Length: 286
Image (cartoon, rainbow, N blue to C red; front, side, top):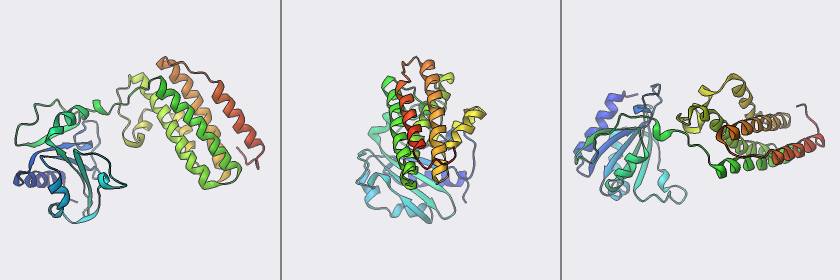
């Protein structure tokens, strides 16, 4: 695996030699002052260009970065992302380094600076970037929910719970587990809101809530782990009710903290419905 200095020098050298590349930026975890460096960190790089097409249509230039193990181009998968001003090459190389290189049109530089506070400029041929503030996580802070977002999350959680119960009642493991995953997303969202509120939402939860456990007290973290059940009916039923207990508790507390009106009648009615289904199932131990 090549070290950071070697990779960055290679990326800058290519950009310096290529007239069509007007600036190079590094962003992501490698410029995050709160990140713990390790060898698995990606190199999140942006090449600012005037025209995307030459770089997309002829891709031999990517081989200059090393022997590629696998590449993904999400902007052209599944019918395309619809982004007209950016194009990303996600590349994993045989030595283990990963480079996520995004082509960005020059016209989009102001928006790029506005939307991401984790930017370090490595090369700027045309002085496109003014003096930037030191990199910080501020653009990655969790956003507080408004009334609609909060209630949509609650409604989705309890609606999905009925699918989990139906799958468990029928012993349809794959169906139930699929909806457990969707239900868990709502639980994680509510848990993140609950956790961020005392910090005035000035914390970064990371992709897939990966930093959430660092902020949770022990009891909530232990309870949250029940949202990852084993693929059997008994575990799914247990997870369903434990997730319901935790979600309702966090919902009431978070609504109070944020000053959002929330009625518990609907979730309590759904909970009783789930208990009735469980009582009329094969009744695995809870």
